[in-house]
Image 1: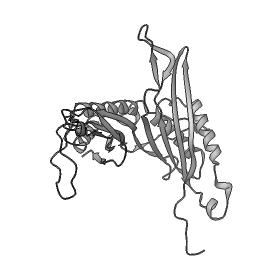
Image 2: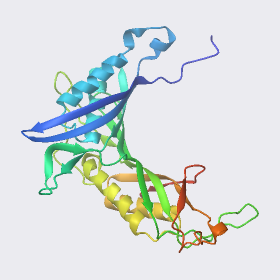
Image 3: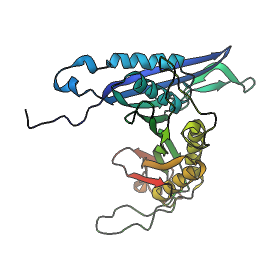
Image 4: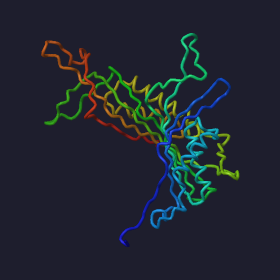
Length: 318
């Protein structure tokens, strides 16, 4: 088969579900991740000549993930944990040159007690279906002592709605136009946000087992090692702008969101939003003499899932 050649290889373990409890007496912290780990390196012969000696079994990758979840001091920080996991794998295996670690972090928040409004030390509630996302590439291709990383984080499935404060008019009118211009409407979307940090150099582990992951004592605020605070600010910025902006269009509101995330986080190089419309169509009640279609009188709507608009853009630092 001389007509073909292997040009790219990558493999690993997907859908590794991890739940970790961090205990400090009666006070507990919990975190739940969905994890994917994919590897690249000198593994071509496993494809071309059935040489399994270069394969780190995907079951082993799963076990490494669980072991790092047990011992890593960074488990509660998704970006740092993903970097720790990727750094360990490329450092342990000489022939593995890149590790790609993807995390989804599910939402668990403390239950506030009605008696005193104090958060319970070890009881939690799933308070939303949105998930924090992290994509990390740890690169050892320049040498095991010259590790670098790329990190993109974000939020997915953050469902939001405002029942007023959104208009849409002035768009192109031609023979295909059936959409009516409105000066007020229901606006809803499921936010998919990603923000990419500046690339960073990593400190290679120096212990014999390659298990250390060293975070510098000082690091830039608003950068990847400050990512917990970046995530909070990005979510807050998204919700603030969505609620407060007198929206002329989804496009205009999206741009303001991205501008604020960039402005508030010095280590973020670019921000991408994908905002699908979640349409709410006023029910036409003219057949019984009731006005439910003009914006001021529209109160009963039909939620429509498809078809839907999809608005996306990337805002980058100058």
